Image 1 (cartoon, rainbow, N blue to C red):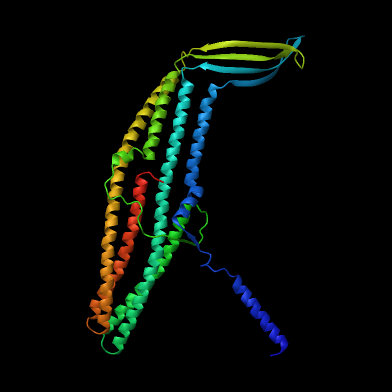
Image 2 (spheres, one colour):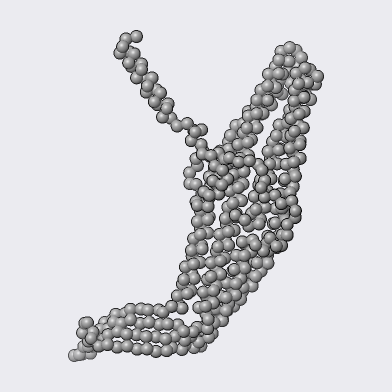
Length: 421
């Protein structure tokens, strides 16, 4: 090889290596998240929490608006007026500051301010309810991805076992000690296992998408989760569901709404009471600009509500109905929360107990599979008996994984039923 050809060859190899070195490795870019990572990210980014936070800010602004009547109302004004007849014209210029201070309005502003404070409390409890619901969805998505990852391992292991089975059956078939039906069955079992690997891979993609959505992410990136199937919030003793319900944020939020409605009704009745205020004005007026004549005024106003077309009575009736509605909602919510608590606790007990059972079933299936494989290889049992035992092992592995997953989801539902987040 000439020196020129050698240099071109070296250059080609260099470009080739640099190109493949620059290609990103999909597996190395995969992000690994723990449960705590997911909680922290969703708390910052989930749009439902952003919306609930904005609702709190709105309630705070409403309180500021309701409180504004307790402070002086100050306005500045400037005017020009021309008055004329056939041969005469007079101009008037003026400017000044006017202030008004409410002294008494039948405690209407006080009630409005109290109702606004209760609405802030209600909005904060609503934030807790929203956060609890998001936690349940996030935990479910996390567990489903954890299950999909584990199922991928199980299906790949099943493929390996099915391949070994096919090889063993092939040996016996070639030796004339097995019939064609057994051979085809072993091959069909392998095809089924390979299909389930592809299916598990697709399920991982779907689970990643669901988790990304609950994290509040706009774009999907490769995600893996790290965790186990251990239950942390398992209560074997039956709790006091009625007492637990009293601390639920949904019920506390409705209690705040009830108090806000009660104060709103008092505020509506306060419209029938006269209002007392003091007014003051200081400024200048004159026929030329700038005006040079000082003027001021101070006065006390007492206004009596006489008739406004039935608006006040309508507001009283509306607030009475609102109070009745909130009280009924509170009772309904209490009953529903108590039922949800007992239902979630019962399902958690059942799911946790089923894990213990399925673990024993799996252990037995694994032991039987070992013995059956050894017996089949020596001709002590038939293919039909052996494949039944192998199928039982496959089902037991999947059933145990399903039981573990169901327990984690039941735990998440129990936490959500308690209103925790």
